[in-house]
Amino acid sequence: MHYRIVIALIMNNMISLMSLGQNERDALFFSRDEITGSARSISMGGAFTALGGDISGTYINPAGIGVYRSNEFSIGLGFHTSVSLSDYYKNSSLDSKSNLNIPSLGIVGVNEIKSGGKWRSTSMAFGMHRAQSFHRSYSIMANDVPSSMIDSYQKTILEDQAAPSELGSLYPFDIFLAWQTYVLDTFTGSGYYNAAGVLPVDQSYSAVESGAKRETFFSFGGNYDDKLYLGANVNFSRISLERSYTHSESINPVDSTTVLKQYAFQFDESFSGLGASVSAGLIYRPIAPLRIGLSFKSPTVYSLDLEYESNMTATFTNPLVIQPDVYDERSPYLGQYKFRLTSPTRTTLGIAYVIGKNGLVSVDAEYVDYTRIRMQGTSDGYNFNAEENAIRNQLQSALNLRFGAEYRLTQLWSLRGGFAQYGDPYSKDLLDQGSFQLYSLGIGFRNGDYFIDAAYQMKSSEEIKFLYDPTLVESASISQTDHRITATFGFKF
Image (tube, rainbow, N blue to C red; front, top):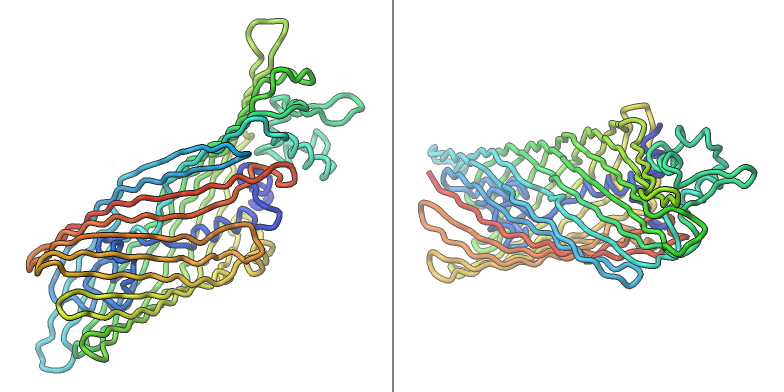
């Protein structure tokens, strides 16, 4: 069965009729980045395109490697907490998830050129950068919801005119499980029977996600006359994502039209894969305090594997015995699919101004055209034409703005701050909300031998989600706040 057909039938990822399907949403999800990495770059809002001398700055703009004057090793430690607040039928639910990680790691080697020419040095670096964190959990709950997810199952069957004998082949990961657990059944001559009853039900939905997008990069660059810095990276990406969703419903006990007490549907999926890209950049100093940076990152081509499975458990009251009847059914096989994803090009312009020995300010503008995302199937030749049409028609280009400042409190201590506004990749006529903001603060200690930096970052974002068919149920709104604390230690040698 085609991956698109399978995913389109999974209730827990259903969204607005005026929105992207799950395939396209995952493609966009994997094509976006956050501001992570070293504590210094995080605290300055990621505005490092015109700066250098930082391992994450080298990832952002490879020309930053030319700014290094000596060999350096650095490593970071991060603590990330994601807090989600949902609103569904005027009921609020709070959830959170935390994890420890290594956001950056790198070593830089500098070779001074003493031949007397204008080339001052060349540099090489190896680094690891955590480009995106997938860790989060959220819950959605409400009492007396006027419809059931089973209503959407019944609607799908009637629209497709599917016979009971076809359910296993058409809907093996959701509707077929409802059939096997008697949540959907048939009466002779009366069509399908919906065991969810006719009265409002209590609903509970929970989701847990974990994983990350990590990039390993090799850099090479040089310093020409302390005015022009050039660099290039070869980047290798790794994506690892695990998701688990559970939708539960409790039937009103006074509903005399059914003996169903409750049921729960769970869906698990995992993505894994590798990708590769190249990036290049320059930094130019027309006058001593002013730096202008330009970086370009090619599309990243990923080869991804998807695995998924589901199960449903239903509990019925039985007036003849004390114990209720419990039915449990797992999807008939493990779903597997391989596909290729190509993320869009990123072009970034940055300007920084060094204010004597007092500090600096920096601004970045990054342009990303999300309509350039491409998908290609590798398992069975599925062409993804429908998904790519949706990407071109319902996504748009976005401008991501980053601002950072650093103030030297003393010769050794610096105070930093930053802000970033990431543009909405969704077309304006969609209900989806894809923009988000980041606020950051940090402090750093540096001498001639080593440095210690610390940063705090807060990310604020909004999401709209439909638990099933949006013609049957209202949307849930999810407000997510991410808190990230990062410390980076490094020394020169």
